[in-house]
Length: 197
Image 1 (cartoon, rainbow, N blue to C red):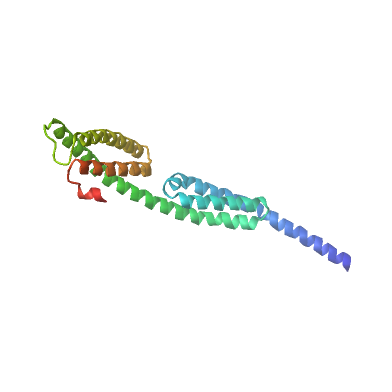
Image 2: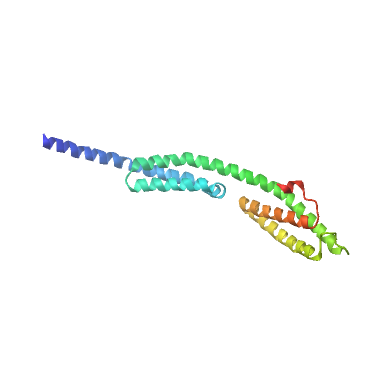
């Protein structure tokens, strides 16, 4: 009887090992599939939804760690959950990219007009024999040098946008807008209502 029990126990262990190793290949495929799904979305994800991208990378690392420990069921379950996480990630990145694109459209419409208005005002004041009240020569010189900075920064923002870095373009363009508002205020110019956003 004891010998029979021992044989049953050994057979059970072999069956368990066979079952576990039977899940090894599906778990490996699930991890590879999840990684491929993430890789396809990773470019925009890292730019526009970095926190969610980090969560997916953590889940993938967890799936690989479970696989390495031989816990194939957990590895497969975690890898399978990555697919829905990547769907959420892709949606979030798309929404953020659209928001930034709309912001860029507004900025690229308004900021060059502000810079042009500042340039015109600086040109007029530079030829003027008397500066308006509240503006001295130092303030005008500051506006001139600030205008040069605005022009350079706007070129940088445009280059960022053209290279696909919409987030960087918007960040730089926002700095240009804020600095343009300060210069316009120094020069006693009216601030466009859109620039107050």
